[in-house]
Length: 204
Figure 1 (cartoon, one colour):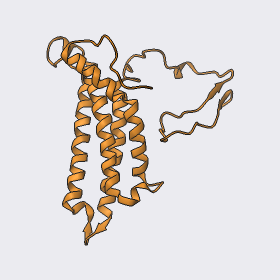
Figure 2 (tube, rainbow, N blue to C red):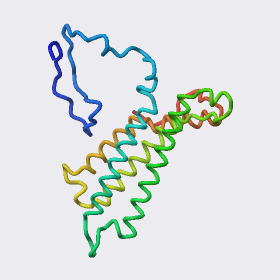
Figure 3 (tube, rainbow, N blue to C red):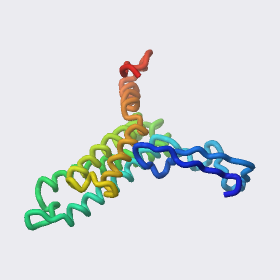
Figure 4 (spheres, one colour):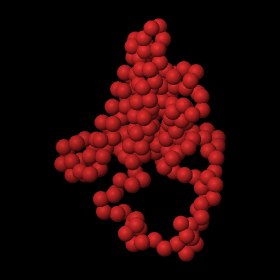
């Protein structure tokens, strides 16, 4: 676009598609009024929140599960698709259960965010659902992608295979999810106390 210059993206661990890491220069760029995103736009209070991050991570987990089911349904060993082997089936069942648990927690967090009156009138317990959703989903999806990688076997680490990409993206998402800080805040909220000093996390 005229007036917009994007330099080569910086290298990184994973190709996080929706968060390109690059320097962008604007030179007399004109933006139509209808395309300007105002601070706290009506109906879009979810932007950049824990729910958004958790939902993105959930999508990554779903893609990893679907690719794993597809691969294990096509890969034949012992005269039948490996998905029919009990050990493989148990792995996939575990992946599916954790993904569904994350989905339900995200839905709960999103609903509570849209209905604060539910907390006020006691319909829903007062808990940090957003942080719970982010922390749980970040941890669950990283584990899920690693399980998928194990089922892909040696093919899983071949560059270009979908699962190796999902494993790398899951690592990034777990850090974006602030899993450990979120857990501290969850504990504070449930126990009703605040730390006077931040927890010691080691030398940086």
